[in-house]
Length: 95
Image 1: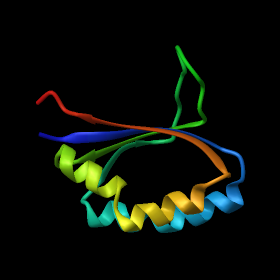
Image 2: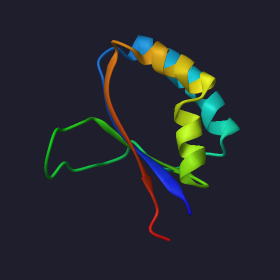
Image 3: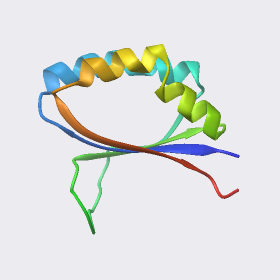
């Protein structure tokens, strides 16, 4: 059963965030991530407003969680510290 990362991001320092963007793909490639939405036009209807919205598909919940907790993604998260507000949820598909 597929699982998805749903991420909301507001970047405060693009120069520092570029380091995250150069490191994070290593984890996504390793765990077979498929980007379904990345940025693009969005409308916030309720809750906190973020600049970017990302939906990433993984083969299953265990793989999505393994990617998040991987050494590769830990390095990416460290690079992202203090330059962006981020909310990430991992959700399992109904099908």
